[in-house]
Picture 1 (cartoon, rainbow, N blue to C red):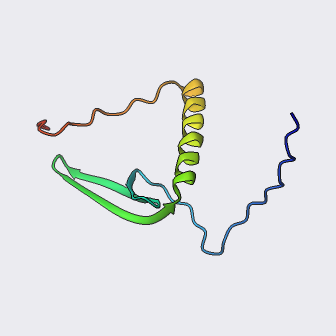
Picture 2: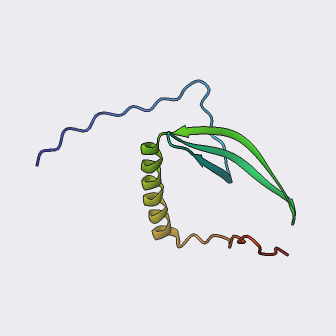
Length: 98
């Protein structure tokens, strides 16, 4: 089977391009798109959390699925190299956090 040649891809940065650290991502979705809101989370105390949202990105459902695949591949490669990524247990509804 002959595959078509891959296009040459050029990446460029817009004048307002920026990079920033996020430790919080909220995801909303509807029929037409996914909306990812990135921010930084600061836990000042055991019962006080502040999230400063700084960027929202809309993705088509197709791009959201492609992102899922790319992230899964990269997470698998990361874990193969550095070991399993463990997530902190998330309390379920009704759990008491002490």
